[in-house]
Length: 86
Image (cartoon, rainbow, N blue to C red; front, side, top):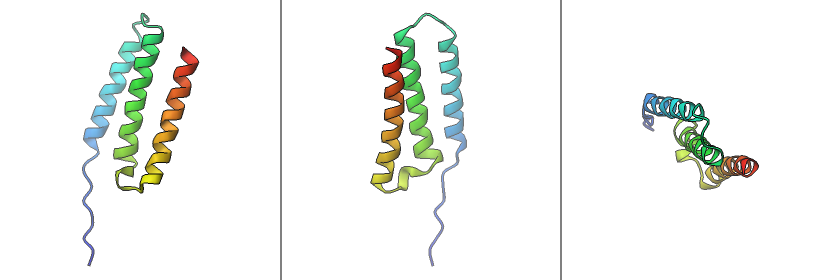
């Protein structure tokens, strides 16, 4: 008989994502950054995307090709936005 896999609680991920969102919102309100602010904000968005992909979408245990596609898509979107801001 297979034993069910016990998944870790999601509240630490939600707490971390909420704190990062608040930090990025406060940073964006400073209006002093320009390109540096865009890079920091997109870096934070990328970190949040990685956390969501790995923890909440449970792709940590997915096949490598699927994780590569999803992480590649995230990198492409963040990279395209970064290029558009510079």
